[in-house]
Image (tube, rainbow, N blue to C red; front, side, top):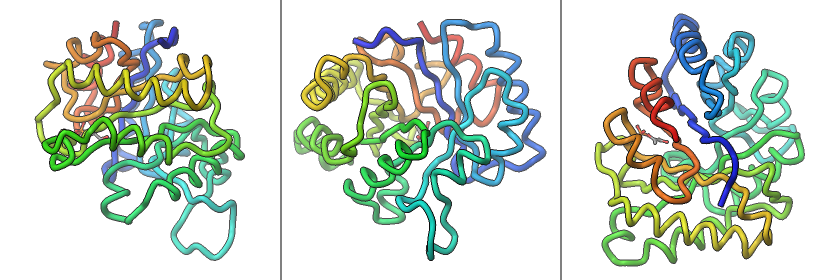
Length: 247
Ligand code: PEP
């Protein structure tokens, strides 16, 4: 099991303007004294540079990157561009991109590989739909998804994984604690199969409707190394209590 600090990551999705830098500063000020927790925000790409200049101890990440390093890919951003802007890592394979942009596991692995080559960390997201949960296939499906989403270059010190059930994102629903624990144990086994003993050091975050009311219980589940937080990360009033709930 990971010996790292808890890792609490805010995914702002397509929300935020320059005027919201005050929210970042409130999060940085409010979380700065908690040495046991590592905090990150993934703002929209338009805010990465401005946020990186004012982040204090908060890590700034991107929400996606292109798999290629340059070329004719209108509207896309390479890992090196995100790094130059000030990101130190990126989310890849978020279920909203898998659904909205049709990204498959091979696309996610190629993006993660591009991050590795650019010297950026990766949070690789995986998670089942409600149909897959109801059919009893969730663990088999999500572990296969992770195995296929890891690039050849995967290494334990560079990688984090986020387990995010699609049906829990933005819905107010969360799995039972025992189901989160079972999934994280299965993902841990997939990581140690792939990375050997070093796989024990990869942080596995839980994401999906984490809020101030449920964070302490979720973060206390065995092998939950932190949280990927969407809606509740947009305001310091809801994000700071989640950070403070980390063990
Ligand atoms: C997410 O989209 O990564 C997420 C966890 O969202 P929310 O916390 O709003 O469910």
